[in-house]
Structure formats: C-alpha cells, structure tokens
Image (cartoon, rainbow, N blue to C red):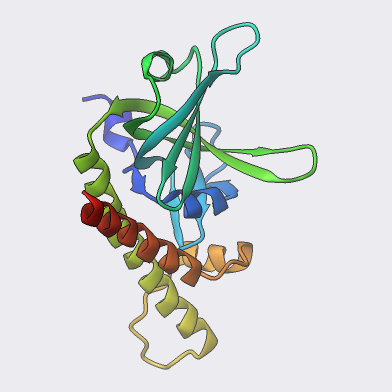
Length: 208
C-alpha cells in the first residue's frame, strides 16, 4: 500500500447547504504538499467530501479542452462539480450520463473568489458512480446523523464558551473555535436542513 493510500483523509458526509457555506479554506502546515481543508460551519474540517444526489445538468464549459460541469441536487441545495483532463474518469461519467440520474461522488472541496468578492465552493471529483434511489436515501439518513452529531458537539462547545463551568467535560475543539470566529450563520440552520431532508424522504415514501 502506498503512502498516499495510508494518509488519505476520510471523506466527510455533508449536505449541500452546509458545504456551500464552507467558504474558508486552510492548511495545517506551511508544507506545500500539506492537504487543503474546507472549514465546515458545524465545527469540522473536510479535505474530501462524499455526497449522493440527482445529477440534473451537465455541460462542457471548457475552451481549449473538455472541462465538464455537473449540477448535483440533494434535499438541501446544489453541489457544483468540475472535472477535466486531470480527472478523466469523472469527466467521462459526466460526459456519458444522461440527466437526471442519481450519482455518488467523492471529491475535494475547492473555493473560488469571484470578481465581486463572493466565494463559491465546488467539488473536484475523484470518483463519480451512477447509483440507485435506495443508495441516495441511505446517504440522506446517514448524512443527517453525521450532521446532527457535529451540530450537538458544536452547540456544547459554544455553550461552554459563553458560560464556562469549572470541571467541564466539553472537549477543546479547535475547528469549532475557528467556525465561531469565521462564520455568522447559526448552526441551527443546518438542523432545520436535516429535518427537511428527512421529511423529503418520508414524502417520497408516502407518494410511492
């Protein structure tokens, strides 16, 4: 097994609404090969993300060579995925897949600042696979669980910062601290998104 495989970061499950708010990127060291991380508003970091949604649109936006953009929708919003000559397998899936289709994607977050100063977040895919509805539904449930775990840990940390108690068992959380400093949106927004995502599955089941 190569060193790269040994040190590959776990892909974090995240809904589109939180991912698109993860506009702050950072490195843990000055080493130029150090991994880039996106800071998630719920107090975690992500070098890689894993999501499943509906591929609703694909377009070759390249000028000199193929550069595919995919639009992937989950119950909370939209992921934008870009793949070109350095991601040939992912680009081929975007080229060959006819929307709409359920897709599972693992990739790296990328931030881009527009001319007006807006920071957009997108994904550079490592892999894209066409999947079935059951896989999408399972991802929604599991991502809801992971998101709620992050929200609860963040809320405990935030409460401890506001009213520190001696002998507190709330662990230090540097990424929650960074999120408190960098982001304004309350994490309760993401709890509402989780509830809406789970309710959307129930509605689908009821109408099936």
